[in-house]
Image 1 (cartoon, rainbow, N blue to C red):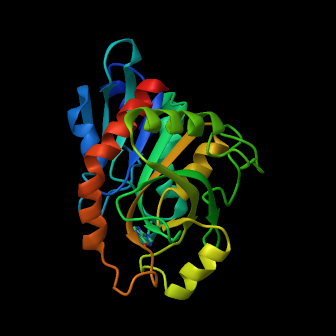
Image 2: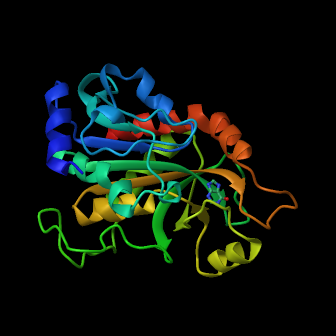
Length: 273
Ligand code: HPA
């Protein structure tokens, strides 16, 4: 496998300016990358060492360009399509792009996802600020020899979701009149949706939402000293809450319904960084 440095060097050779902000966009939100100005789009297949995206609805390319206008504009790198553990990638590949972003000079990572609502007062279509996460069962992306050039062997996770950015997100959402719920995101490996018993367990343990992404990337980002902001779009109520089966179509449909509001929030957030 090509190294992180090779991937970063290749990307650097194709872009006019180095990004300071990285965005990893979940189901249906990749379109944000379609309307940023002066963008350079690089298909993952062209980048040395990059895994290839397999999920429908994910374009599988990196977009570098300017988000926002005037003095608040930022050069961003957007991942249109992410790598999920359930697709079969080793954790090392799932988080490869995060380390490439770090090498490109990214300081702030914004991660979004579609998630199941574990907290019963949530409704599909609501947005949730991720204040913390729970991960168990799966390997850490940091398992194995530590790369000291990114961070320490035993890295602190007590402020992985940067408090300053959480505060900013609350302010921006309030200014825009967008309701922003908050809570703990639980990572489950998938690809099956959870059982009702697993959802009861997660709620008992303090989770408000559940999903199959984001956490590996955030662990890697925190290790490398990046500031992180995470937002979930609640796409469905988690298993056992409503008397109805779960399906991927519902997740995608809700994603479409919240898309404009979600993108407006992310765009204002990036401008406010
Ligand atoms: N469970 C796990 N992942 C998900 C869900 C869910 O209910 N909804 C969207 N992603």
